[in-house]
Figure 1 (tube, rainbow, N blue to C red):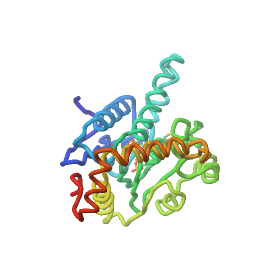
Figure 2: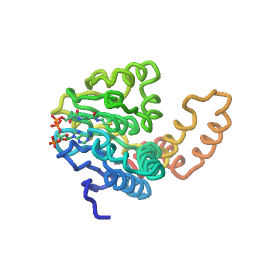
Figure 3: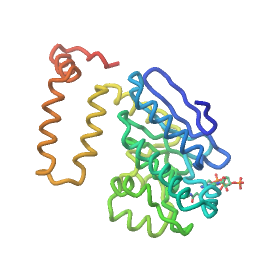
Length: 260
Ligand code: COA
C-alpha cells in the first residue's frame, strides 16, 4: 500500500507507525483513517511483528479529527456521514483489538481523537508538557466513538469533568488519571518507549494476544460471569506450545525461544 499519511518502519520484531501529516499536527482525515486502520490490521496479522509503536512526526502526536474534514460532513448524505463515522470507530477498535501490544509515543499535543487514540493503545508513554484534552464540546461536538476506550481508561468521574469542560490538561494529570502510563522528560521519551518495548519482547507472543483478549473479556464483568472463561483460558494456555516452552525454560534456567 502506498502511504501518504503515514511513515512505517519495520525493525526486527518492532513495527513503528508514524502519523505523518505534521502541517496539520497529524489531524486525521478519511485517508489517514483508512491507511492507519489497514496498516495496523496488517501488522496484527504478521507473526514476525511482536510490538507496534505509534508516534507522530512534527511538533505533535495528533490533533484529533481533521476539523475541515469533519465540517465537510454537512454536505454528506446521512449514509455517507455514517460510513465515515463508522470508519473512525473501526480504526480505534483495530488498535484496541490488535493481537499485538500497541505502545504510544506521545508528545506535543493529543487532543480529541488524538487523545482517543492514546486511550485505545495498550501502553501510552507521554513527554512532560504534552497537552491533552477532550476538546470536542468546545467545538460543539462530542467525543463519541472514542468514549468507550477513554471511559475504560480514566473512569466515569474524570470523564465527566474532562468531557464536559473540554479543558486541556498536562501529561502529569494524564498519568494520574490513567490515560497514559508514564509522563517523562521529553529527552527521555524515546528511552522510556524502548524500555516498554524491551519488556514486551520478553513475553510470549501468543500469551500477549491472549492476555489482551482476557482483559477485554473480564473488564467490568461480574467474577461469576467470567469465571468459566478464565478457567478455560488457563487450561488451554498451560498446555499450549508457548506455555510449555515458557515454563520449561524457566525451570531449565534459560531464556524461552522468543526471549531476547
Ligand atoms: N484539524 C484541522 N487542522 C488542524 C487541526 C485539526 N484538528 N489542529 C490543528 N490544525 C491546523 C491548524 O489550523 C493550523 O493550520 P494553518 O497552518 O493553516 O493555520 C496548523 O494545523 C497548525 O496548527 P497550530 O495551532 O498553528 O499549531 P500549534 O503547534 O501551535 O498547536 C495544537 C497545535 C494541536 C495544540 C492546536 O492546533 C490545536 O489546539 N488544535 C485543535 C485540536 C482540537 O481541538 N482537536 C479536536 C478535534 S475533535
